[in-house]
Image (cartoon, rainbow, N blue to C red; front, side):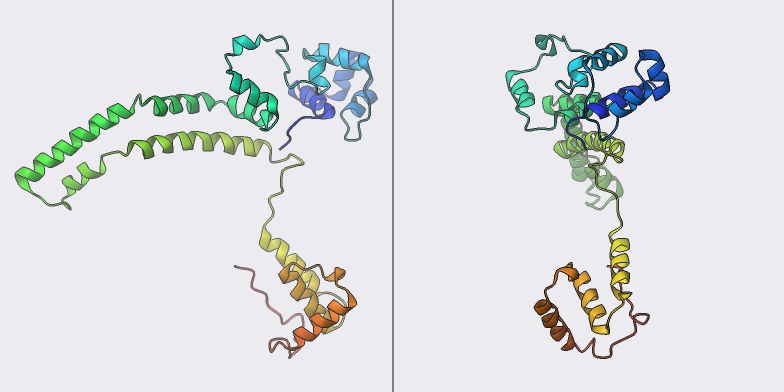
Length: 273
């Protein structure tokens, strides 16, 4: 995902957020459609101060935000004391060692408040004491029944009382983990189309295409076999020197599997693993 938005990305995001076309934005701001389009283009080069001020006023953001100087879009004059951040937190945010934009996305996710509440409950043991009390009651009930009736550890009711007890640490860790998993999954989905996000590619499809290309190579059987062997080992065949190629062919000739020189249509490759 992007660590920091560029000027074109910021301008396009603001326009898209308001569901505006370039024509509508041009009419509303008095700036030309061609200029506005160039500001959002990947090959963006420059934007005039007049356009920056005009667009900042129209969108209700600071010029620093549009220029990438600040990540604060709508609250440029917020009092830091009012944020109730510790000195260590301020130092961390200013250090640049973490992805502040990702941190903001996590914190502004609709389920983040639930994560914080559940974490507070876990840390302060607000509910843990109730779980502890319940476990004691179940343990005492099980002990009493065992002493009076001795039904055995595998009795249905005895086993129910045993399994009904909750491991506090495991339970609350699972709750917090599930909260965070949901947030991360949503953010990951939102960034699926980012240019810096890896495409979801089926490795077997890629391997099959590469091997088919190697087998369809118009050359001698030895060359096809050499290309196939290199593809399977992740070696760039085209970068082999003449001596390396000769050595590879000589090595392949020693294989009992390649002596028959099979037709490329007869070779079957198992990509299921």
